[in-house]
Length: 79
Image (cartoon, rainbow, N blue to C red):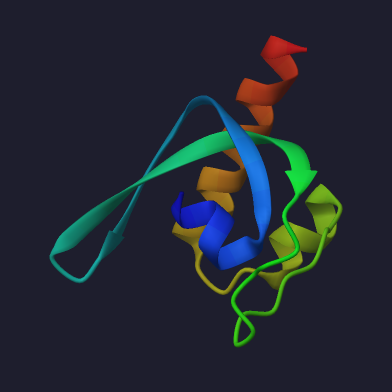
């Protein structure tokens, strides 16, 4: 539901991808498959579809890049 509200797309959870630490809290991250557009994403949020290399280059934190690489490995084993 959160993904639908924020990004405006319906997704299906494929697998857990890991977690990211934010200050003293952790956020669980998931590998998701796009299903369809809902057309009602939050207006203040920017969204874009990026290649893996472009997505890695756009991330500011090494921990986020590592998580994305891990999710890519999971996706490759499932396809």
